[in-house]
Length: 196
Image (cartoon, rainbow, N blue to C red; front, top):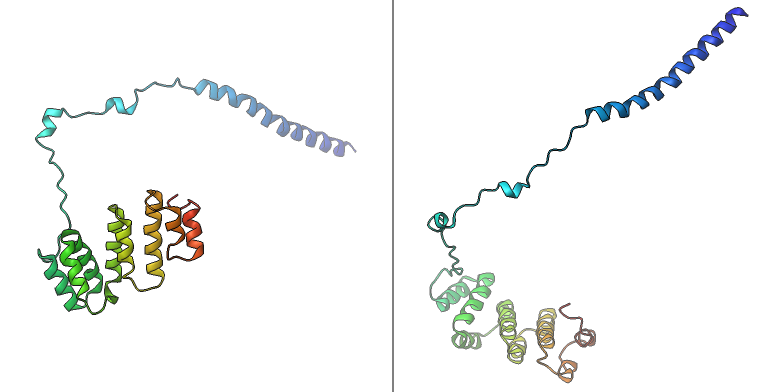
């Protein structure tokens, strides 16, 4: 039995040693971290070290920005529209027509009226109607929107013009109620949630 008691004493001693050893390390760890602390060094904020150029020196070296409007392939917008129409390039034709309308609305309107079909020009008519309404004449914008083929594009264009006019109090409630729009869209206009 003597060997068994020695074995138990030895196991108890090792268990006590390992159980006590982490507590000793935990107690010493804060002392070590306290001894290794450094006082924080206060540095000035980074923006105080920035080098700011002298105004007199930069005026001669910095160029003024120059923004130029996008150029059409032709300086004559009417000729550009004719060229794109002959080429069948409907996407660029719509943008060219809208640009032409900005420069010369009467000539562009007359050219449009002379066209046998406005099928390929629906996006251009939408842009023109929206621009007219944004420039403060929603009633004229609605007349242009009536040139669009009936469908989702016309409905959205009409709704956009009416909502723009509603935000600017340019139409009465009766005019909004009589809009050529579905009942749900009119309720949206009257609810005051457009543009929020």
